Image 1 (cartoon, rainbow, N blue to C red):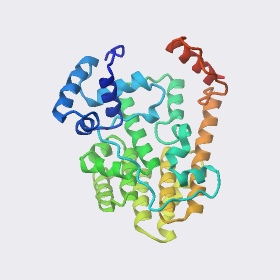
Image 2: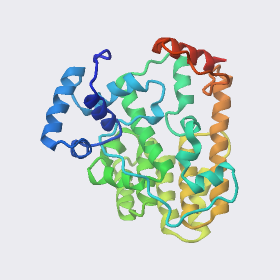
Image 3: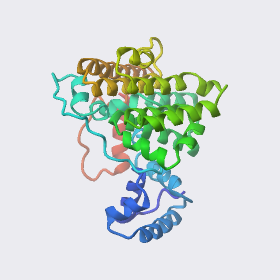
Image 4: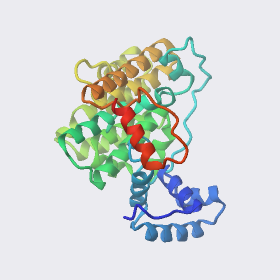
Length: 326
């Protein structure tokens, strides 16, 4: 792959849309071309940058433009629909994090702190660096897929899960990652696609029966999410609440359960419980940030200044890196 390739505006825009999960048809509509023309452009673009397909193009683009932000990347070939709004506007009771999450969504309220929680977050990256473990393209693609699913859970982007399911990606996701399958089931269940969620849980349980990776906590989360959505009593929330309130070492799966529980509380108009659950997720993000600093990584710059004009990209990057390390 040639990272030094000079890109024109059209190519940059097409790669940006691919990274967001857009299909050739979506790109054609946004750019005003026919779908056939877009496919020709994409074919020529792949050849120019030295990749074979859409997934490799996305990985190439993320390496080139956003190497330090895997939480914002997207390796999935599916389009990313707009977030689903709440049934009614929710007015915040105050200015805390939980109030912001109710007024907007968890993803918006968390901001950069969202990269500290969920699967393949910054803490995981820092651990890899300390161990000296290289990140190959397969791992980059896997982490990108997981982060996109995590972002959809935070944004209540439930329609994205249904698109993945309808386009036949559910089985592949289940084979590649039990945690990703759990997030997909949560998206389906929370979005009201209960039949699809139930079928997927049944299919995954049958195919992975006896395998600890699927028969354990991931499968428990899938079933807890579907039960919480289908029920109406407090008892229907108990399994999901148990996973979300788990004591001890924080895990990405626990944080997915917390986000799912927030959405269920919000849908039931239990705003006090939703607010407190969101605050608990913020605490998880803050603890992860503190762990990063204990490892010598300062993900949030303590001191920064507007760079002088004309110093060049490398100088700006070096200055920012120094600020983060302070």
